[in-house]
Image (cartoon, rainbow over all chains, first blue to last red; front, side, top):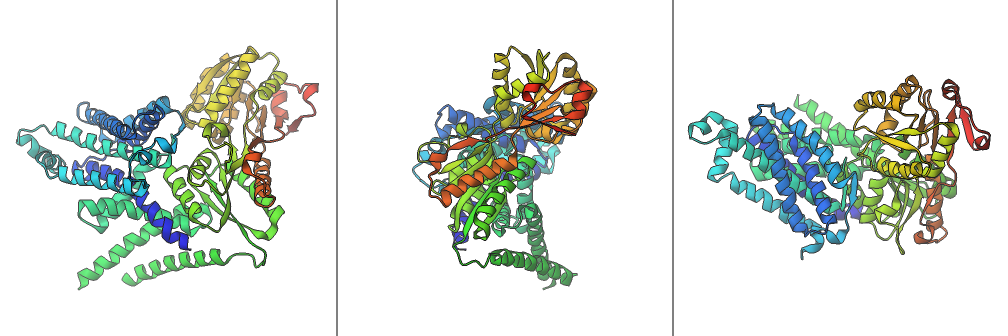
Length: 282
Length: 323
């Protein structure tokens, strides 16, 4: 039993920090610029693939994260261009780009790659602790986005989601801001993919399937519990990872794992509902 | 309404707690020291399931009620596999681990460096970099010898000059299998074409376009093809082309032959190795990663007669005919 108290929080914290970035990416697309984007899943995988390839070529781990984020931004730009310039539906442009990225990932790194633990970010930084590094990365990123959304550009970005006509009336290009939103979201997602690959020392082409679902669930749980950006994003991601970790620790027949995860989510949502009703009654 | 929500919540919570307690208390009452084995499975898959059953069966036979198993299945997710491996690593009551499939092996070996990890159903253990002096990893590989495979195919279809390799390029097992097949085919001067598929939806157009120009279709260990085997077999039969699988699956009508390892036996062999390490004090780096002693060759009788294929005398002993 004692091992529960030791590992469970660390595992939840580490994976929570990584997925918080994907949740943030989904937040930027579906809540800030108000256009749901499927590419987040594709750029997560591509971020991982780019990282794996560059690490195998012995590039400095910090630079690989920067490269992954740049590629993520380019991918987002592509989706944005397809959506705005070719007037494709946002979902289909996301699906198109994600589908194409699968081939790119296969070409760059193959179906799987193994990275030596010594080559990763966690070995090269002086912190010597995965949780600490991931925590710093997560809080830095979320903090930066938080700050960015309060700058003039950030306000325009939010305005695009609320009322694109107003942005045009201000003499700014709504198209450009939409693309910027896509770029921001996908570079965050690519960063998360990069961190996950470095954390697990393993890249698998199918390993990123379902990322969007994890992120969406995290975001919805998070926004139900809190209204602030930081707590809804980080809290949601942590809570979702906590649910998965609990499912693992319950050690039932693995067939029921997904069912238990689903039930635990229902429990959390229902708890929230109960408390809310109580407050209204008072 | 509120009452209903509370009752439902309470019921869910209670059932989870009850289940957890039951599982915790469900331990044999034997006084002898209990060995707990943690099993990490990459995903739900017939081959991996059978390997797991073989592993469990072996240790049950050898240790009886002295052994308990904790099974976890990552269902293909990297993050989940990592979380599960961490949970196993922290659990000091676990004596040894079993990793089923490539991802589980890689993740488990990355997290756990001391206790034994018995691996099985891994195609290329060398490439994973877990086998070295002083390693804590040993087990069995499901690698099929490509030369044997090509020999059998040539014995069954002597006129073969050009084959199609049907596989999905996104599967690591399939890609490494295809590479080995290419080397073996080159040795025998047989030409080949790649028939790559990325999902089950591609199978029909790919086979229809490629079948007329080849003499046989070979399939490496490939999950996508295995899942849609019924469809592949029907198309191959329609085109009257021999379809040969390099994994152990009972041939259906349309599949001429399957050459591969018996995953239950493979898991069983890994179980024996785990037993040797845990009970007999052998070191994992003495045992390394072994292939299965004997391949299984199954030939489908009806399909063979439809295609006009006869079993050559020299192979009669090794081949099992199935209806």
